[in-house]
Length: 64
Picture 1 (cartoon, rainbow, N blue to C red):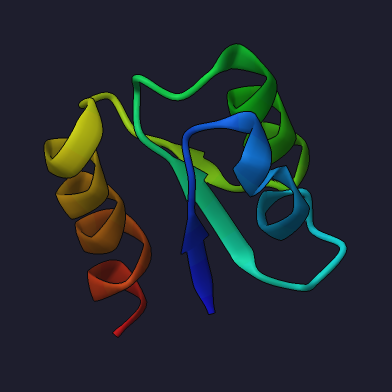
Picture 2 (picture 1 turned 60 degrees about the horizontal axis):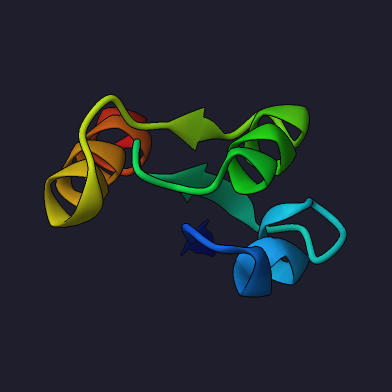
């Protein structure tokens, strides 16, 4: 499961305890970005929806 989030209410699915791959767009809160990076996830260079597209291309398409 790929979990993508940008605010503190998303931390439970991004911190690694549930076993999800985690990612965040560039406009995510700093605490969220840190949680994603600690979980060896990916923080996009692009914000919002474009960031989600970047994440999917990076984490899903490259794994195929």
